[in-house]
Image 1 (cartoon, rainbow, N blue to C red):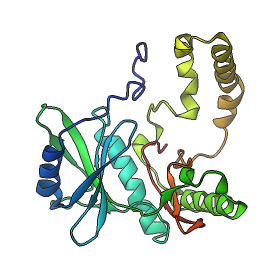
Image 2 (cartoon, rainbow, N blue to C red; image 1 turned 90 degrees about the vertical axis):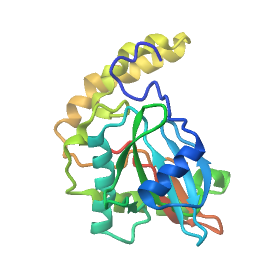
Image 3 (tube, rainbow, N blue to C red; image 1 turned 30 degrees about the vertical axis):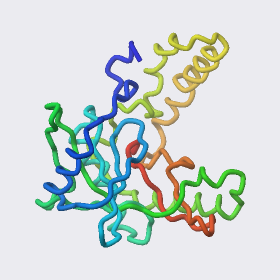
Image 4 (cartoon, rainbow, N blue to C red; image 1 turned 120 degrees about the horizontal axis):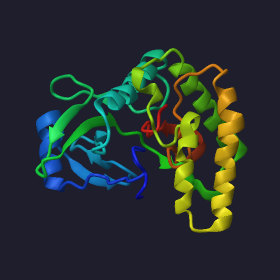
Length: 242
């Protein structure tokens, strides 16, 4: 989107490196070999990797706009959750051959990306359940988010207040972009919401307690057992953590 200024990730520009090159990075930096299956992502390049022994991993190449500080923030949160409550179904960080949570790799196109690996969480996205989501599943969903928030309580990092486009505390800075909405009715509605946030909500937020939260727990990022939808098997995608 032209006119996005310094607001990251509105121009998503995900990496698109060749699979053979990615396989080489996986072996060299993680000793990881197996079957690679591409996973959808808005701004990163992700693969599900299953080894000959049946172990499953998520191999992630971060967007070129991702900073080391933010990667450290996100993966640090996963480490923190694991220390606070190891029973929570969130991804576990797999260290590279040097024992680091992530590494920086320069690819053949001369672009450098942050690369990291997580243990893969089984299940199907809650969005695949369709209209069969019952009240028990909703309660389990809510309970999981509450437990994750409790586990994140006390986690601090300098990158927690990054200038992310989905940061509700700084959403008013998006107002100049509403001019790109062609539909007058839709543009007016969005202008109204952002004005309300700027004038009413954001000033009140400043007086409330704050902590790091997942912030993106929608139905595509919550996995459930395909044989029993009330069992939550995973909360994934900590990329919008704030």
